Figure (spheres, rainbow, N blue to C red):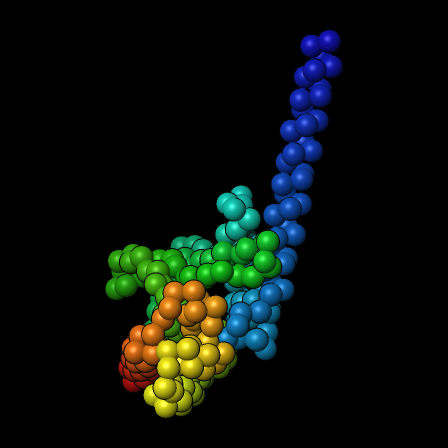
Length: 229
């Protein structure tokens, strides 16, 4: 009886391991085949493989938390060697990378990548230095090079123009409800008409929100310009 119980437990552990392993492999393949919103011409897996073709990319997937997996592609360079990485064609900066991790938070429920970041270790004049991207703008320094695209502020400028056009429309309205109808039905605006109505957002408040959105877009545009000086 004890022997039978032991065999049963072992088989359960094996099945659990195989199930988890198979699930991780499926999640990894899903993420590798996905495309990032700002880089839609290549899948994530192909872009990284094509750029780092001289290095061995290792893919891992963590256990899910609330249907979110962290999938990572990593390269660890042994010995005195390193990856020489130039973020862009405009500056002369060169990064000497010893370890690099591309980390993607994949939401299985909605089949989307919620967030992503890049982190690792640099060889800075003989000293190891940790680095980690804090936002999409910082990550774009890597991804622009990897995907072979040039930095552009066109998208941001277009958004600013659209916000100014919306502001002009709202300024011409006579009532709060009219302002809510125009702003809530405009794709440029961040709040829905149902939210505006439920919270009785006034015409004055809508104009203030639009001004804040314009300010934010201008800051992003300036960051992009300064990043590639």
